[in-house]
Image 1 (cartoon, one colour):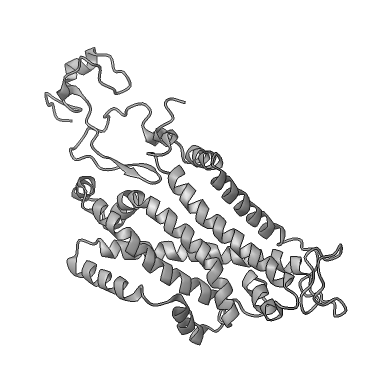
Image 2: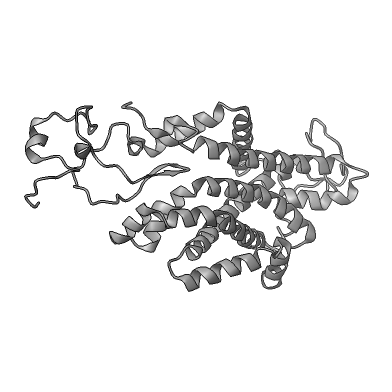
Length: 360
């Protein structure tokens, strides 16, 4: 360490040893030059991201008490969930999604009837003590197929969200790149491809892959990733041109480190909303693509498959269409509400508890 007269934001060595430190916060009598400099706190949707300081600081620079970095990840998640639970809409979304997850896990080990068991003497029966939701055209138990279908739809939603996030963030990184040629080509490509409907993408993928879950995941992930990149680009551009990102690059931070550490936290509210919308739309897309014969293959339980096989008999046996249609509607609404409430609960401007634990 060089023997400079001033260190740590302008506090002299002699003054620093003789003056008591109050958890890094300056007293009223301190001069402006002796106050610690905090210029790198940037707002993000998932708490607060500590951006690089615009001026070099010592390694032992004081950290103010109650700084958001003292919040542990598990505690932050607990605060967000508690904040969501306080709202009626958030409580509804959490209950629906929790029930969906529980039913999907239970279906791995138990269903009222085996899926391959059919009864030709009890076809298109209504709800009864033996079959709570009735039977379908083959005499199979509707409740058993819906329970098993919840597992398939949950896996599709998780895969679609993962592909959407990965592909969308890759496009965002290209669109805010410092290479003007790459950024320009990426913007033009996104604007051109975003008009291509998801059904057309699925039809193109179904030619080499056939009807499969992979077609649903790739088609939805590609289409929703384009939309995510288009919506997130303005905020990503503001973050990429900010002072703390330029400082981080000057300190040697690479492109991916800047993207993950600074740009993504600042566009997190947009990501949360878009990913929740993509999750809800994936449930609808699975039903539509399966009905067209290019989605979930025959024999694999899913809500879309239950709708596709029973919609022909809606005038005679409407209940068989009602149950899967009701599940799709409730889950899609819950996913959309979940994204909106999560955005507000994860924002430190609307949730003061995320700004720090205040010594707790």
